[in-house]
Structure formats: structure tokens, C-alpha cells
Amino acid sequence: MAGGVYALRRQPVIIWLRRARRRSTRRRAEPQRLGRPWPWTSAFLYAATLGLAALVLWKVPAQRAAVPVSAPLARPSPMDRWLHRLRVSSHTLTGWLIDAIPLLGLIDRPHRSEMRWGAMMETGIQEVTGVRLTNVANLLEVEIPLLSRIPPPRKQAPSKPPLVRAPQSVLDAVEPGLPGDGGRVWAVLGTDPVVGLYQTHSRESFWAYVNPASPTAYSTHWSHTIVAVGWWLAEDLAREKIGVVQSRVDNMSQGLLASYDESYVTAEHLISWFPTVRLLIDVHRQGNPVNPAVVGGQKVAKILWIVGTDQLLPNPYWRENLNIVHQLVAALREKAPGILYGSGIDIVPYRYNQQLRPGSLMVEIGGTNSTLAEEKRACEFLAAAIEEVLTRIKAKAP
Image (cartoon, rainbow, N blue to C red):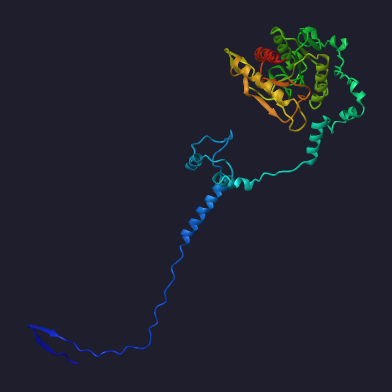
């Protein structure tokens, strides 16, 4: 319909007349409301945080009781510092709970009580009668009073093994070419030897003193072998007022493989014929070239101690042997800095006849390229170190 105009207050007013629409009785379908999306990312992070916290409470100690010597030295993390401030014990989750609620400890580890009727009766009878039911001798004395007048048997002291003396024919045996002591196979310097020396690889020599065509640095020219080195060590020990015996038996007479079997017999003879020996030393040189040390402006053969353990075969003395070697190494390091090969100690799984007695040692002086002059100088420092350690051991002995 068309609209009309009326004049009201000088302002025209336009009125539009529209056809009224019928309200529909049908209800419009409302749009379906969508549910809120689940925050999966937040839920995952929250669960991961809870899992990490549980792992910390379950596995991470609140305060380290000790740090292994092989652990790297690093600054503690913030987590370490935070756990340290809590001052709780280094337990798992149970320990954390017990620290928080102490009464839980009674539930977690209840105290068990048990009635031992037998022990109670035995104690009561002993208190009343003074008789121990578990002591047969005491029971017999109660039944037969005269038994108490019989003196107990005297305990006999264990008999000492008979002293085995070396056959005079062995002590007088001589082999041409052996250095010093008139070429005796068993060289004894001083009385009551305290140090015993022998050479398992008696034919070990040095490249400068063997035939250039020889495939190995071995020789039977004894003054150019490790036997001569052992003799120089014996002489230096004698100068230190230490009695010493050196076996110059050729333990390689049956070859290299049988040398330790032969030297075992040699070492057994040495400690049985000379029971005063405290240190039994097997003298070697290394099987490879070793550059000499420079001590006091002179070249000196380097020294390495070999300590056999019980890793493969029983060796009840290896820890005691290692303790003695540590003292010898300290003395050598003080007297001749640089004379040690590496750390001065090589711990090996083999026994090398060091299971015979406490103080069974093995020393390697120099290598295949060493000179006799370098070997001889090393023996002087070695003898001084042995004298110092023996004096210390003697002072501690009861």
C-alpha cells in the first residue's frame, strides 16, 4: 500500500504500512551445537609431566650418598641442587613417602616378634642351675663330679717344619761364564739372605750383544744376559747391608714354554733352602724396545713391576704383593724421577709363580734395546728402593 504524509510539528513523518507476515507454526531447525574440542596437546604434556615426576620420585635419589671415582666432575644441575635442599634420604618412592609421613614406616616395615621358647628355657635353666644344656662337658661334670678334677689336656704348639739345608754339592756347583762369585750357580752374599733373586727367562739378552742374524734377543753368554743384571742387583743389595741369594740356574734349558715350570722348582728350592728370604724377585727385561730414562744426566733403564692376580688361578698373596710393589714404586719415584715405565705397575691375570709366598714379585728392567750400562745404573736405584721398603717392613713387624 502507498504511504501518506502528515504535517506534525512542521516535521514530515513518513509512515510505511506493510503487510504483516504470519508467524509460522513450524519451528525452525536450530543449528546443531558442536562440542568443545578436547585439548589433547595439553593433556599429553600434563601426563608426561606426571610421568616424569613419578619417575623422579621412583628412581632419582634425593641426595647422593657417594660419587663414583670414574664420574666426571661437573656442576650439579638445578634438579640436583633442588633435591639436595630437600635433605631427604636417598631411597625410592617408599623412602620419599616415609620421610613425608613417618608412621608409614611401621606399615611398610613392621617389626616382627617371635617367641623362642627353647632359648628362653635354656637361659632360665642356666640362670638357676648354672649348667649350659648345650655344653656336653658341663653336663657330664654335673652327673660325674670327679670329672671336674681332671686337668684339661695341654695344647701342643704346632711343630715347625724341619729346616731343609741346601746340599753342599749344589752350593759348590760352578758354571763357567757366570758373572761374579767365582761362577757359582747359587751366589750367596751376606748371611741370612733376606732377598732372593732368580731369572725365569735366564737367556734374555739385548740386541746390542747378540748376533745380528739372531731372530731373538736370547743368549747363553751369561755376562750379556739378564743373569748379569740380577748379579749387579745382588751386589748393590749387599752394599746396602742386605743379605741376598741369587740363583743362576738356566730355567730355559728346556725352551721358553717350559721356563716357568723350571723356575717354579728353582723358586721352591730357594725359599726352602733359605727360609729367611722375605722378598722373592724374578728379574726380567721387557720383550720390546724401551727408551731409557735420564736420571742425573745419565741414561737409565726403566723399571716396571708385574703383579699377578687370582683372576685365572688361586693366588692368595697377590694383594699383599701389590701393597709391597706400591711402596717400591713410591720409593723409586722419589729416588729417581722418570725411572718408572708408565705408572710402574702392570697388573695381569696370570700368577707367574707369585703364589709361592708373600713378597713374590716380578720386575722388568729395561727392554731389548737397553745397554748393559743402563741396566747397571737402574740396579743401583732399585737396590736403594728395596732397602728402604725392607727397613719399613721390618719396623712394622712385631
